[in-house]
Amino acid sequence: MLVKPSLIVEDITTIDLSALKAAGVKGFIFDLDNTIMAPRLGALEARIESWLAILQAEGFKCIVLSNNKKAEYCQLAEKVLNIPVLSHAAKPRRAKFRQALQMIGLQADEVAMVGDRPLTDIWVGQRMGSYTILVDPLIKHSEKVYIKVLRRMERMFVQGG
Ligand SMILES: [Mg+2]
Image 1 (cartoon, rainbow, N blue to C red):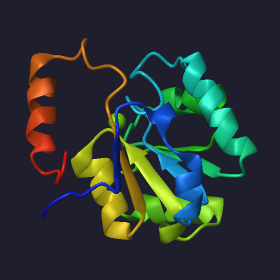
Image 2 (cartoon, rainbow, N blue to C red):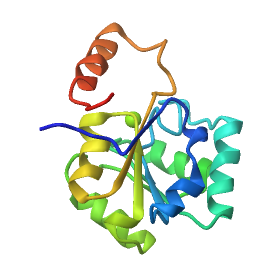
Image 3 (cartoon, rainbow, N blue to C red):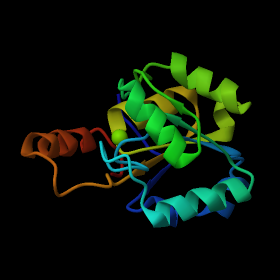
Image 4 (spheres, helix red, strand yellow):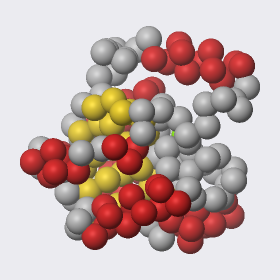
């Protein structure tokens, strides 16, 4: 098993939207924690907020697919982001991914799955045949050491990562 993201970026806001459109991407499925929001804070960085607004203005459909199980937190995120949030996703399982596709009315090969975790976010997108974008986690420095080690180990599964 090898995870091979279609694209690897440090900063989500640098994603080239016209290149994605040319690749047939019409929508985004986002991971939540550490991809578009710092975990547990329930706050959205202004630059990410304006990037999400650009996406929607450009006509991209957006939905969030999170493994987070805290209903209140996910409801808060939904309000803050103004994007539907599906929780309990159990990525890399595909069932909720399919549900997300249905909700935005797109096929798997018409979406980009964006996330910070190779073995959950990218792996599910890859299995579905979607475009996949691996991003650097929003909060890198405040993470506990074992999480950092885990991330480094995860990166070993990434081709070209
Ligand atoms: Mg994440």
